[in-house]
Amino acid sequence: MKKKVDYIIVGLGLAGLAFAEELSEANKSFIVFEDDSQTSSLVAGGVYNPVILKRFTPVWNAKEQLEIALPFYERLERKFNAKFDEKFQIKKVFKSIEDQNNWFEASDKPLLSNYLNPIIDHQKIDGIIADFGFGNVKEAGRIDTKKLVERYREYLQKEHKIIFEKFDYDLIEIEENQVNYKDTCANRIVFCEGFGIKQNPFFNYLPLNEAKGELLTIHAPDLQIDFLLKSTLFVMPLGDHLYKVGATFNWTDKTSNPSKEGKEELVEKLKKVITVPYTIVSQSAGIRPTVAGRRPLIGIHPVHGNLVVLNGLGTRGVMIAPTMAKQLFNHLEKGGTLETEVDIKRFG
Image (cartoon, rainbow, N blue to C red; front, side):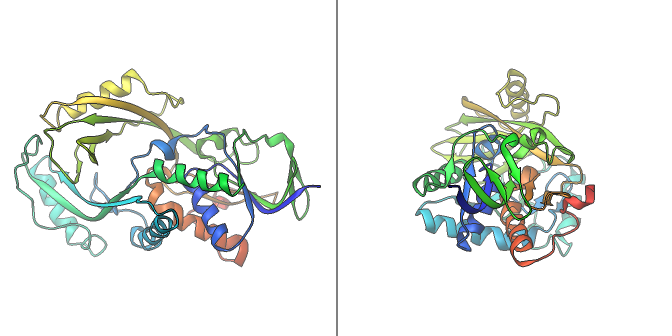
């Protein structure tokens, strides 16, 4: 006798978690398969920031995404009686007068005026190299993605809704109105595998790229900051004089193992950002699933209507995951439309 559920979810990073929560809210039954092969959500910086600070431009649909994401994380904090969301200011280090002028121009634009303080911050902060001052970004913060995913997995374990094993695509049996996998029968399978989708025979045609990112955690007692510092890299306070530093982008190394090269790159860049002594506590690495055009991969398989994908959230997963999960759920359950920018039909 097969176990009947509404959904099978493959992968429990931010994408799978957000979709599982949509199902829970709607009283839909599901089972998750997770094999710990993808680590991007576990090692992510978890920062949400409505502004692309490299070019002083707004993040795609930032306002709409935050309006869904922040209440989503608040609900999870209540659900688990835990703190996941830490609000903070971001200080962007200016490299030149031109940088300052570009900031002035950007802060006057309608989509950015709520987030960028137009006044240049000239305060001197011990241990930070900032000869041209800072620009202050509002409405930013950090989701502790590692803590959140771990708590969610524990919750699913207690509910008997997660199986920790590698998913075997060869065992999928597709029927007209259902899909079978081992002893489970479901209406649909939703694949939220991150870059693991490259091994998925149903969705590996999608143009997903792998960008390895590495981070350091440092201990710097003399660096007294309670904001995220953004320069050639970011320095993010974690408490107890610990700071997360990152991140690298490596398009050739496809492993999730911390590398000597990644460490050296971060140490070299850090010399241009802070002047205080520090010790390296740990190093982590993960593979970000990215898509050309920086738009997610959401939708239904072109042939098999009960196979679905939710992927390609990229570096801004904490902002975009709740919105994309809700949009996909509404599409599958209520006949809502997917934005053409994210629908995988654009690659049909």
